[in-house]
Length: 354
Image 1 (cartoon, rainbow, N blue to C red):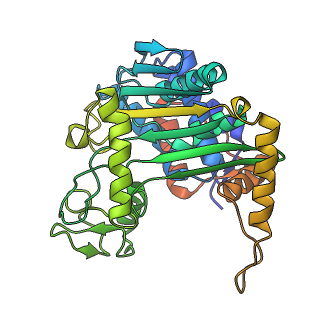
Image 2: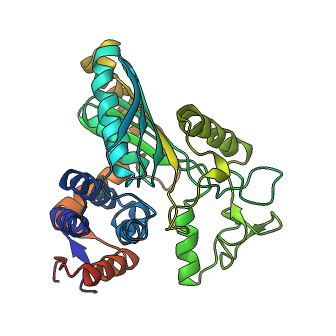
């Protein structure tokens, strides 16, 4: 077993925060970023967690992200806000925008905050769960760089724009879903390329627009495939509108990759919506109905060979609980990235010795 097999959530969070502080990031920004990334790993979404911290820091160092600029509120009303992220690390404007949407929804029942000129914000699910933990329904959308083809095209046309929802569920952990509109996340294709592995033919197309199992030329050639063909494309386009078109941010190919073009501002846009059930049937009425719904899902007739039905987010909460009790098991690629960062910034990382 490797020396970095496990780590506690707090030790992982503290390491991330210290690394960002050493780069000169202001304390509140560093705390938010470390919180979002470490919590994402706790849910098992390692492609969007602390693995990316070193690349974020490299991006900051060469001018692809601003370190400490303020978020600018361009316009605001009782149930909305329009914000400029000023090209800072994306977790910060995302956290602040959802926090604002939650607060505004308590007065108006529903609120929306749109952010332009931001950067990669990690996993969308973190922010929808933020709302759910505060007894709100949270909806999160982001556009990303054009990494996905569309029906009839043979190259990258639109981003695999992620979306997430989160809902409070009373005695159950919040219901939540976090998905991108491609068949899989592009980082999974990149990892398969690094590992020299073949991929399913539903993941990407080659330079001719044809399905392929070979990731070796991606992302220089080819593109991600939308999930469910025209359905994934249609939803991705809706997300492009509700984020970038609505906020005045970069659209389609105006958005460079946060990872493959570290020297450029990411120029992505996000939208956060919070709904307060208290204004409708009251939070107790809402969570009671959520509990009833979950229990109906759990009790549905099981397919042959299956002994449990999960609601969205239930598997992730199970991973979280195990990691909280036993320590967070990090995959080798995450460990290697954290160890490289640790050596670079000369800050030790407290892995559990086993």
